[in-house]
Length: 144
Image (cartoon, rainbow, N blue to C red; front, side, top):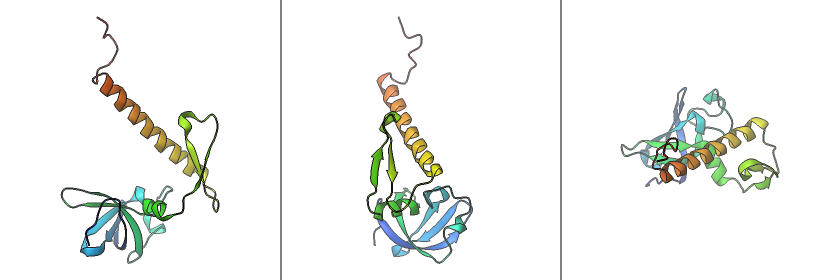
C-alpha cells in the first residue's frame, strides 16, 4: 500500500520515546508521531495517551526525501470527527472563530492554544506579504 500525505491510516505503536511515538504503517513502513501531535492538549508524558502495541489512526503529515514519515494522531481525530459548530465572538481581532463542540466543552487552555496558533500563522503570513512587497528591506531611511 502506497502511503500519501494527507491520508488517515491505521498503525501499530512499536516504540515510545520522550519526544514521540514510532508507528508501524501498512506496507511495513515506519513513521513517527511527535509529542506535539499526540493530542489536542499539552502532552507532558506520552504514555498517558498511548501505549506500545496499541493500534491507532494517524494522519500522514509529510514524507521527506529520505523516506521519513511524519504522523499526527490529533489531526487524524480532527479529520474523522464530525464537523463542529462554529461561533464567532464579536469584536475578536482577525475574526478568530471559536470551535464549540456540542458534546464537550473545550478547556480555556485549549482555546488559548488554538488562538495563539492562529495568531502566529496570521502574523507570519502578514510578515511574508510585507517582505515580498518591499523586497525584504526595511522602510526606514529609504527616502531619497
